[in-house]
Image 1 (tube, rainbow, N blue to C red):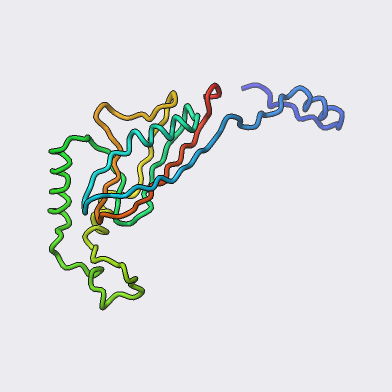
Image 2: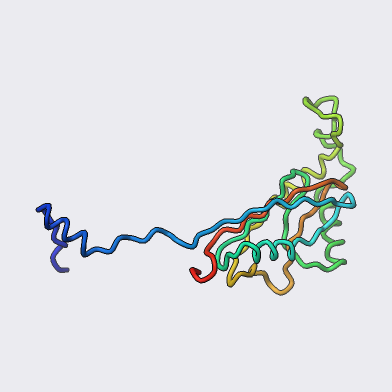
Amino acid sequence: MGDPPRMATHPVEREREREREPEPEPPTGWSAASDVVTLRTETTRQFIDLTELVAERVRRSGISHGLVSVVTRHTTTAIVVNEDEPLLLEDMGHLLDRLVPPDVRYGHDDMARRTGVGPDERANGAAHCRSLLLGASQVFHVDAGAIQLGRWQRIFLVELDGPRTRAVSILVLGLRGAHA
């Protein structure tokens, strides 16, 4: 097993030990870049492909290895990953309608029972419930300055209560350029 390392006891010995041990280097090259993108949706339910927009923010950040987080700032939208194929997007809309039917009575839609209802409040309980199923964020790996997605994967903002003005927050965190 060997002898345990000898501890310096004399002040001069301790100083010599410190001279021999390299100082730990502080982390360098770490960086973060954030942006908030505002867009206007056009229909009640809409799948908006954000992939190129997110990829451009990653390129602009200069981060070569790390993570990118995409977060919606609304409770009636979602961020999802799937294929951008029109019939599939239609199928996903039908699935949301079956799981959270639009014609069911939602307590959230009863404005007489709710408190603090603003003048522009919509009856949108179904949109809130659908958002709950889909999620508000996704995180992706960044390698060699590019988002790591599969061949058919695309990043979508899913509008569930449009048309509205929406905001998406993008945070890129990681190592810049040659440090990666």
